[in-house]
Image (cartoon, rainbow, N blue to C red; front, top):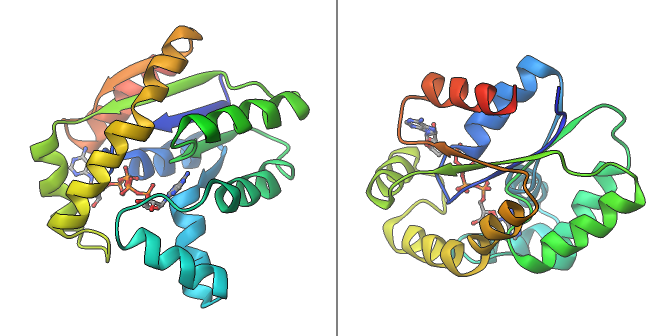
Length: 182
Ligand code: B4P
């Protein structure tokens, strides 16, 4: 079974939702940069305060901060892992590649979850997190298209990308992911 995975998709695509279910079922470590950043924000640290300001505008926090968080975590995992929401741009993808070569654990599959914009906006407004208001969501979608979507092409060229339709119900999307990784 593939156990070095990455879930990619626009904000609200369900990366976090599906990653949690997958990791619980298959015993992988779930590494969500969004969750790790929100933990930092809750701790009230100086770093967290800076991150909150950026996240609440829908921008990406600095590559250096995200990389240091991911590196620290990945180095301590012995079984499989699932990256959720990282990398989010080409620079992060290149750094990840170098890191994974160093620890000799190459990425085995990338799940790209696709959802139409109207549906994404509805879902995020219903979730209602601090960064889930219409203006910020539109900015997050714009940044996704500019910075993160090019990764689809990158991983497709590497032959490890699997596209999933994320417009359906949670359990239907999950079955498609299991099939794609099976
Ligand atoms: P993330 O925490 O990664 O969150 P997200 O993209 O908004 O959500 P996700 O796709 O995981 O959706 P979810 O399952 O929750 O990022 C937040 C912020 O952190 C970023 O904007 C950025 O500032 C920062 N950040 C994170 N990583 C970074 C990085 N690498 N570099 C720089 N900055 C970074 O689902 C959304 C909602 O839809 C939920 O309410 C869920 O219940 C619902 N839902 C899910 N699937 C559904 C389905 N099939 N049907 C109906 N509803 C569904």
